[in-house]
Picture 1 (cartoon, rainbow, N blue to C red):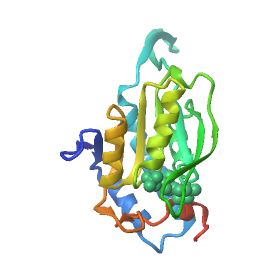
Picture 2: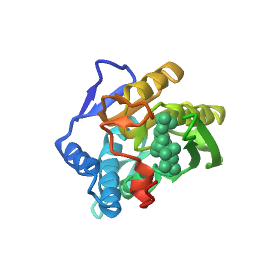
Picture 3: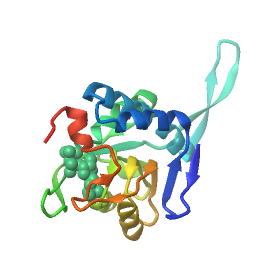
Picture 4: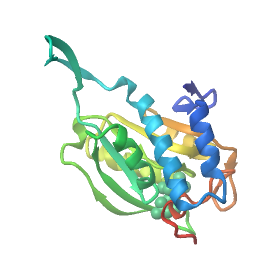
Length: 216
Ligand code: PRP
């Protein structure tokens, strides 16, 4: 289901037909917000199944109707950190599969002119560093927002951080690799490049606007 990128050692690319089917529908410019949101959430749910593969578990005894059995439960609290706004478009899909996860929010907007991240909000569980953290954002373009989010989480003591994004640009993956080489990025597609406006090409447009129906 996952392929290690030959280009970037921090990048895992999904090669699952279902994910690519849904991603192509999301890319289509005529897909309306309600369907775009649905595709994003469904893809995010499929992605988290793989991303959580190495989460640690503890064993305990569960009483079946017939006898005691050995059970397993996640042994650390998991926190999703969607980058507002667009990351919210993937969060419900993950929570559907993983209702025990907590959600911390970080609001970062890319300045239209400088392309630099502007941090405007954050709210996290107090013990966020007690377990794995998954940064959630449909797009990794210049990488400015993701690097800023990871910097912030590291300052809070988080050591187990991963990122889920739908489409990523080589420039953004490279920036994350240079700044946070231990963070794995899980993406549905490594797109071709950034254009002169720092938009991912071919990309899927502005994910935040498409999720919330607020075209620029
Ligand atoms: C988009 C996107 C990422 C960021 C990627 O958000 O959802 O958060 O840009 O760009 P970068 O890698 O160059 O930082 P945007 O700033 O448009 O905010 P929004 O989600 O509120 O629309």
